[in-house]
Length: 193
Image 1: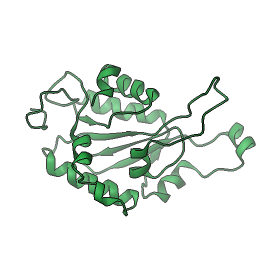
Image 2: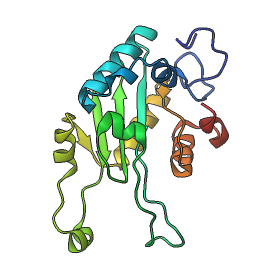
Image 3: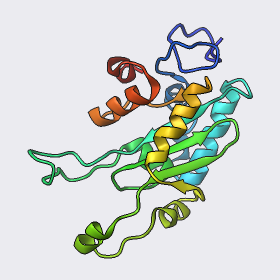
């Protein structure tokens, strides 16, 4: 059993080694369990999501919920980007409206982490001093932040341990390919959650 009832579609989980897109996170959002939380801030929204996911899954094997923020999208070459637009789900739950961020919410331990990279000297020359990732995390109620490279390791560790990995269908191809790479499922399967 994958903890998802009678749904025959595969998921990343302890009971199955076959990997596929889990639907529980999408179901919780579709059912409006968190939709009424429009006036809540990110931390309250994440707590509401944790409660709803806990009510629908088996304790001890809830897994992680993965949120990928959008990245810059080039128009015709890397330095010529479209105006940035953050993924709506990432913005709703995590409140960070900048490219190259990701987050993990552990549904068993309630641990949460935002992953992103602090700007380097090249960026500071063009943009001036910028707030750190830690200060951005603190501003949205998330005390734990790590470099973006650690996100891949966190998801890989969950997959290796057989923990379910929940995610929403990505709108951008970069995120679709990233989730496929991290979970080992096909890009077309990631898109069809």
